[in-house]
Length: 315
Image (tube, rainbow, N blue to C red; front, side):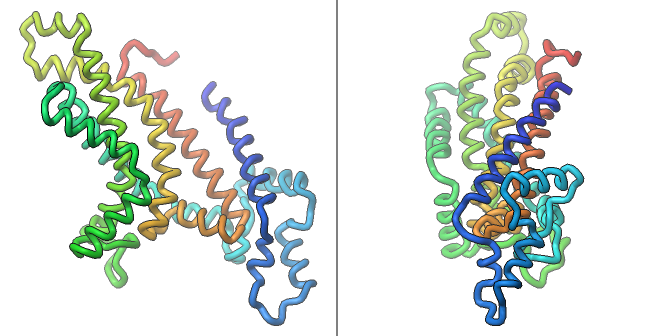
């Protein structure tokens, strides 16, 4: 409950900052929307601006928006006048979650075992490879890695599709086709996290296996598998749970870039396009819904501590 109460001023602060930045940025969304329409008049422009409340002072605009947002109404899109902004975002959330969950699974399934193996083989060739990979993975920008993957696997080798999440004409339940489309964006999105978990697990495992209780377990004659997986790994995973909050933040925010590179129809792509078009309601709805998801992810991270560390109890 305390964590949830802390989230209230956080979300209010985010809304104020994003509202101010979007409104004070150069450009007029109504002018962009009506550009090229031959028979548009100034009265029509003023009527559109008034319909979206853009003719009022900024403080009043924010109060009106916040009041409606608390009731679940984020306004109607300027670019898509017949669509509520929240509905546009909610329709795309499953696509972004699908990409983020796939990337998170890749991070955990590859990064965690690789870090443990590197620690248990310290100084050997696999350790050197893992350390090199973790350094490169955190240094290479996602968009550059995405472009390289498209050139190699989509253009040169023609093994995977380069954009979208489903081939045109395919049935939406075609799992194989969906897997082909998600492989590249999910791996590129997960690349930095895999490197992070590899480095983190290697460091923590090396620290844990030097502890007295590990030597005691070995002296009792327990097998290496039991010592590593039952005693060492569980304690080494505690910092990983801490890092999960930051990783989830990265996945949701980083998906914006990846969705642009691979034309993935998610919240990130829609928010970016709306920001370019200065579609204020959609931008605000996208940011606030994503921020709420992140706050929930941090709450889940705190609850996960109880499962990983038995010393922590829920009061």
